[in-house]
Image (cartoon, rainbow, N blue to C red; front, top):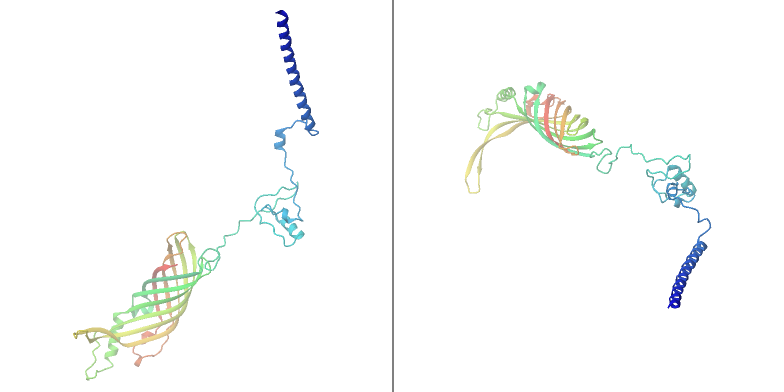
Length: 345
């Protein structure tokens, strides 16, 4: 029993020793393999923090090879010039604001300048964003002044125009104006006496009755008018305008006439209406000038409401273009103040 127990213990001890020896052998063998595969100098310890903080050493691009510059949009003027000289016709990407790594002492590439005003110029707009073409329309009234105020009365007017904007401040407008005038009572009374003194008779020999005499006058014009905007806020603006051109003055005198009208069913009616029996006209040159104010709907809108007042002076000269020339006042110089309200865009 004793010998058998001792034999078993010896066998177990031998197995433990053998296993330990085998593990030690495998460890030594693996270490030798790793040492054999490790390059020279690999045993040096690596400082991870120092590696991350170390500067990156990038070689400067070869200026003789523009393709090496094409990877970046931040090439400076000197680099582009050198590249173009080395390879004429080569394309380098447009400049931007970031710097290229450079050697100590080198200047950074120039940055793009943004100080210039935005350019909106195209077929229909100027460089400042204003429309090149402008149009307008308006209505208002006229106030005769000077000697014209003794003969003509206040009435209505309308205006249309178109022009060219050179910029936001200066424009030139071609305008058509129709200015209507009434007749003062004194002017009609004077004219009534002139007609009665003629002693005119009708076909039956009876004197012509000039009671109910009435008259009207108007001025139409085609003028060229420079306009300067001296102030323009977000909504309100102010401008001055003036110019000159062609003016035609027309005066008509009317008398009530009785006529008849028969409809489709054969019923006839009598009616009375004023009919022109004497007409005068006078062509002349004239000038005008005034001031106006505008209001636009928003700071970005091109449409503007405007109100303006001008002084008009027309150099009418004596001429006789009707029988007996019974109304010489039509040939006098004309002065009036038109007030106009409208829209311009």
